Image (cartoon, rainbow, N blue to C red):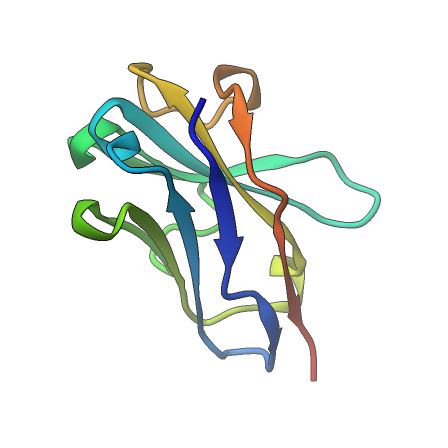
Length: 124
């Protein structure tokens, strides 16, 4: 199974931007769909965005469309989540997850490998 490590979280003002990174094992991105999920305090984990193996397709939750962008750099074995116009409701622990040769869907049960998460806090 691939190794996933998230980074880039932090404290940001409302309206600000952050870019999260999900570093993976070599060759992971050739065969794995990568998803970003988040879990706010007291809430269930929800899908945010995903990118299919080799970047063929992407998907976004309605709540982040137009504000978040997922991308991947296969040479760096890294998937990015660029987040802009962040709002307090975006505050959560963000996780990246991987699944082998599965479609890009925002269903938690599709993914079988998870990182430990990175905290994003949006507050003034």
